[in-house]
Length: 382
Image (tube, rainbow, N blue to C red; front, side):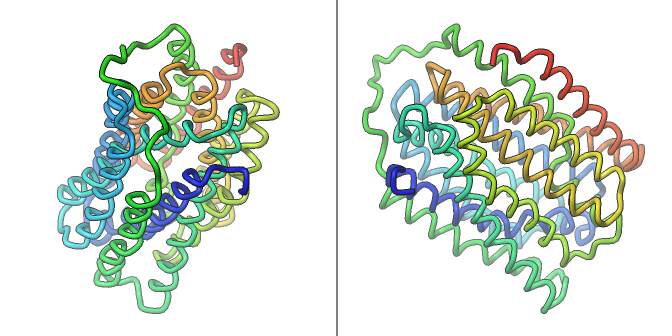
């Protein structure tokens, strides 16, 4: 850690506390929507789609602003503020519409800050150490998720899985959220050099080649289950609500332990082989969910963690090392995830609600297997 710039370390702590707050919500929000508010799986899909689209689509705009006008830290700070103040308000929701709205506002904050934050990390990362740098940062935010998930398990286990307890957990997210805002506001420096107003924005031929390779990831995101549908699959095979956070612990702990080593492997062996590994893990997660035993579900969450951390680190490092307009390409990357992730959530929710969970599981399994095959055949330029 001593060789990593202190601004990246501070940004790691910002992500740590922000993701701690998010982890207090994520394991129980699907249960809140389906079991407490008594909405259907299609409505859960709408909530996920709204949150996913808003979270990722706005990154295209913020990435453009960062490249075009050199506005970086103000977008990062504003995004963290939005997320910190909107999460607790979910405690006052009584319909899927209000949950979707507030989740959208919270994800708006993530959308505003993410591409500029990645640009800020790239600005302070050493050359040819992008994988290690993003691996370190991912380790910090996943550690925050792990720290946030364990208290949720303890509260639900010792004080009951009641509606009041779940709403109080939502309210408690204000504390870590504000700590993260304080760190980014007072300790993190802006980029060393800003672009002037005369900077001419353009997407180069090299940028277009990078985006082409990202299309495989977008398709995989279309088919793979989001963590909310992982949660509802766990519920369908008999897991109690208080056990759901422990499943998230498996995923986040896996990501915490492997993120930094994965970053080092990316720097050593390149992106292609790590992405093949990531997609294999995603397929394995879907296969275990389809199998459906309790032991298989535990394993599915572990493979979900491997897929998530490896694919994100590899794609972010690939952009950092190869794109000319990094902020804009990060924005395109997140916009693609927005579109395909939202469509995937709507598709999974609709199929589960009207055709059954078996069909939803098979669609995701066959879809991810097809994308893995196409990536192996089409990634020779990596």
